[in-house]
Amino acid sequence: MVKAIFSLVAKALYKIGRILNLSYNEINIIVYFFLIPFSWTILVDIWIGNGIASLCFLLFSLIIFKKKQHCFPEWCDILFYKSVVFLKWFNCFGSNYILSSVIICVLIPILVYGFLIYLIC
Image (tube, rainbow, N blue to C red; front, side):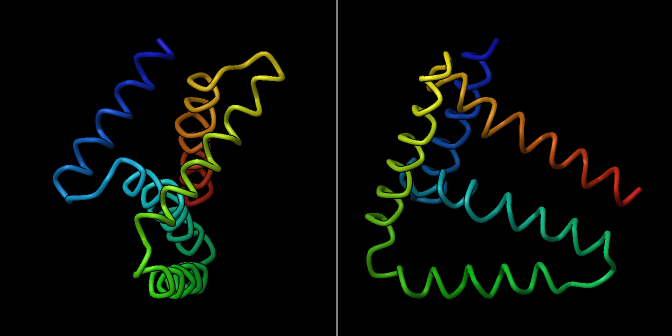
């Protein structure tokens, strides 16, 4: 089941990357470092009743993109590699890359979305 989830997410990211003419590493970084956190800030803003968290995150992201636009693919490769190293670090606790990826990149975001939606409702 874990391998199937990992494969499904990886294939989806590859397809989205191809559609947008982005590498797997680029789309991975955009989704996990910007889009998912940005969506969380939107939910937090809905919960607290203003847009300050989303605005701050958006401004921060725009500054990062502006500073890295000349080397964006290389920057994404570096961040992706560091993410892989982080996920492989959990191997010392009996995990593996695929399991850690599914827990941290799929399960935890789903739980965060669930918690934030619960707060809003």
